Length: 359
Image (cartoon, rainbow, N blue to C red; front, side, top):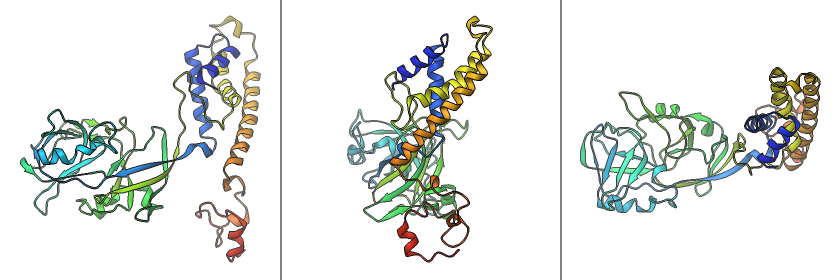
């Protein structure tokens, strides 16, 4: 059912409720329902592309300035990453400059560019350049910082490079990028990435004032992740991820197919609309004679029953072992092959028949 229909039903059940408030209650109810289960429709996939590093030509940098001017050769080299259709696009990439060892340049994100002069493209970075002024600096443009492909991203489930047979799992997928600071503080390791770490959400654009600038591809606060080693050789990742669940924004937006209309309405009534009416009986004379506690209890019961039906239907679409084995079952004990840290165990009878299980 569309958002407009849900809000209309809610205001119909409770006359006097503002349509704007009803819309808020519908989305609050939907957000709560998203958290009731690992819904199958909240798992999806995406592709993350890290192009081969670009380093032809040179760049003119000025210390403590956030802008960089590329020469004609460099401007031509990045042409494929300009424009709306570019993948991943220059605004999704990073840049660093060559320095005399043992010093190493910092890594900056490109947040904008000006190609009005095709032979001298101007880049705007996420913070001022701290490297020394150099009119012909060597540079390298690559992509090692990524943002999730949707705003309601929750977490990565897997990250796979099919071409190079690299699968990021376990601590290779769930670490903090602060670990990379200890392993490779200058980020000199490059080639193929085989770690992904949580980087943060804000970038410091001014070292004096501490002003922050968001990722060029998302709002400020959206999680940013770092690939390590720096993927300069070019990699294409197939990813599986979980979403928090999309909000309904436009009047025609509909909830995911696995959640029934009545489940949303009953949750909105029990948790928000009826308590609102109960708290505002002084403002609405018609509310005074209503037995609100009974209505709230009834809506809670109907919500619980509707939610259970939705879970059963979703279970039919996607086998989830956590709904099958009880926590105290012998196969979930701490004995061999009965461990909580074995994700998805046991998945079928074949596993039991092909392994020695001791009880």
